[in-house]
Length: 303
Image 1 (spheres, rainbow, N blue to C red):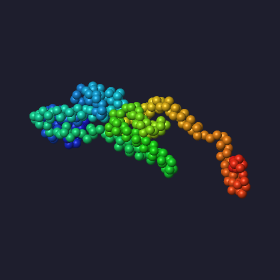
Image 2 (image 1 turned 90 degrees about the vertical axis):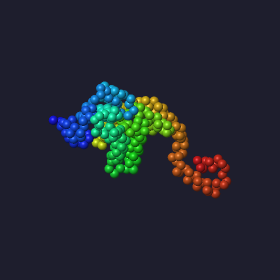
Image 3 (image 1 turned 180 degrees about the vertical axis):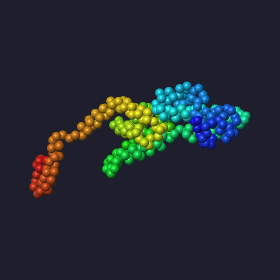
Image 4 (image 1 turned 120 degrees about the vertical axis):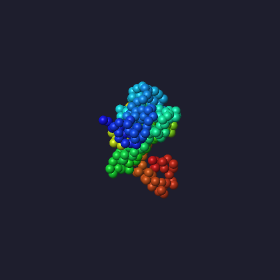
């Protein structure tokens, strides 16, 4: 027979209903039914509420489809969220039962303390840990100063993006954010800092490099789903297409600005021979004949 772990004492039991009755003295039939469903992972309601923070979907008959189509979660994360939704529904029924002051009284307190893992996960903690490893691996052994600075800058830019996501979508932003909207909002914030489109492009490139790295990272938490990371890569490609025209205009403007600073060919020729002409002209100016020369003669001597 299948063995189940009791939610009240963590003991293993094959017949969980008998265990709850004998070991914990649970004689309230409704409470016994709800706790058995909770332990066995069964669903008591026809519809479930979406457990993702910020999502308003309620009483969904196919929560699994909703999670895949709307939130783009993978199979493993979908199962976890469905289990969280089932647990939340049972805890809601337990609270409602407690408010009726049922007789016989309830013996469990799960509805009063709540499960520790039902709270939203802090994805930023896992991202920070992966960013630290990413920066270290990007540097490699015995890195140069320039390579170390580039790796540090790439990690910082990527961290700025995920910190923006945490502020905007909450600690469980990988469950709630739309990658396309997140990248667009982040780019808008960068423009607000008066950064050029070329610099914004480098920010987004760094985000894509890290998301590709995180897909295969052994430190990645299951809640930071592979499907959402791949969705982030696709959103990056779309954002690059949207920025293409603006980027071309910026490059043309930069070329025109640089061209305006280019000196003429005659000036280039003079600069190339300045190490000969300037000392020669200076020595002539210091000679006694300088005092008897007119202005044009002096110019010919110097130039």
